[in-house]
Amino acid sequence: MKSSFRITAFASLVAFFASLAPAMHAQMEPTAKFKVPFAFEYGRQHFAPGVYTIKSNNPNLLTVLGPKGGAMAIVQSDSEPNLSSGNKVIFHKYGDRYFLAEFLIADRGDRITVNESNDEKRAEREYREQIKNGLAPSQVALTLLPENASGN
Image (tube, rainbow, N blue to C red):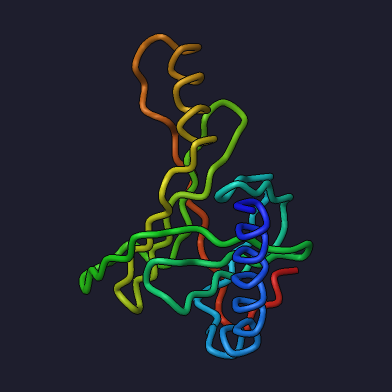
């Protein structure tokens, strides 16, 4: 009986969010585009090299869309009016794995930080164990593409 109730409740929830999808999609505005020359991870998704667009309709939720799909993850947004480092996307690097970490959008004064996934935390622990000298993970910063760029 409980199992049947759970299935019905889950199906109702899925139907509710599916009905909101067109309205939510219409509200989402492109935030930025970036071209990544290496594979990376975002949330629980693995992405191949390519051009990606970030979109947000909520200050705590970010969607990354690429040529073969997308993913959503929880983020923290901070306003930094004097952000002078330019528009960038930053990745944490552990060994040969890259994790999307942060967006800096200087012209809007936005710093968007991606919450670490369990996979990233595990990769960081493994990396630190391999290095055994307490080095911090390296970071890779890429410049965001102009709004009208195709990314080719």
